[in-house]
Length: 165
Ligand code: RP5
Image (tube, rainbow, N blue to C red):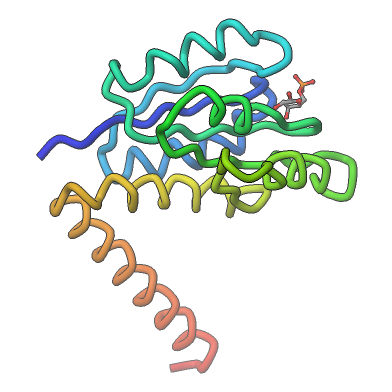
């Protein structure tokens, strides 16, 4: 069963090294995605165009990565009814606290599901997108179960190494 696609937006090409972790997760689950550099501040019209036509292009989830005054996820959420996931980028200000607060502190009525900074946030946003899409796709649900099973096995393997078994 084919699943809906994911739209990944990042505010700057400088975000790509972190955002590539999100793309890797989607690749692992064979989920198609579009990935663009598009800023809420520098290229607002481009961002609007990408978001407003998203549903017609078969997009089911939008992931936005941005740093500093990180308005990309919020502006995106204001222009679509699709679920929007936000990844705050690390910055020199308290490790990205500026980005985190800009992304997470949405006024009531326009939610953005906000993840942690750095690689963990990027990976988890990708996994959460898979979980959202798996609601209508049993094949994806099976792949998620297998992913969890592998994660448990890896932890157990590391534990054995540490125990010297
Ligand atoms: C944000 O400003 C981007 O998302 C990026 O995280 C940050 C810095 O952008 P650059 O100055 O590196 O292009 O809009």
